[in-house]
Amino acid sequence: MIRTLTLLTLALLSAPAFADRAAPHVSGDRILLNKKVHFEYDSEGIQRQSTEVLQDLARLMKNQPDLKVIEIRGHTDANGTMAYNQDLSTRRADEVARFLVAHGVEGRRIRVRGYGESRPLYSGSGERIDEANRRVEFVIVKRD
Image (cartoon, rainbow, N blue to C red):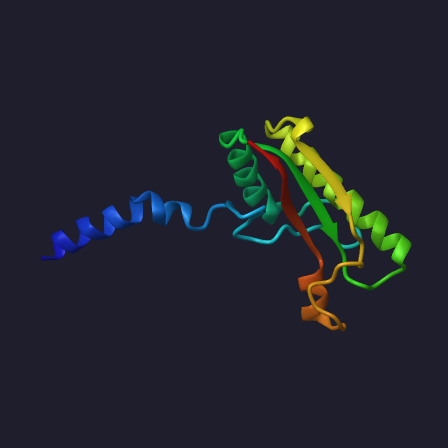
């Protein structure tokens, strides 16, 4: 009985649906990641903890050539000036694009755009709200 349960558990864990559940995936006109992309404070530097999820995104892009163009959209919280946040969000989106190109995604398939603080997920302020509003989104602009 234990051997049967172990074999069943192994079969379930190796099944494609289970393995892919946490991987980046396409949902409508978006590519959704299983983890947030984190940046160094007040910088476009990608934190080490985010390299794996971005490598997974690069793999998805290379395995799905029908995703012709994606737009990487950078967003910030409302701390700082609007001009500074606009620039920071663009630099962060650019840095993600550079990462993807360095990992084999063709540059012609990527556009970048910074939105600064202009499109928050949540209004107000506070640590949790600010954290949610600081993000990078991946929108499919053109597909076959």
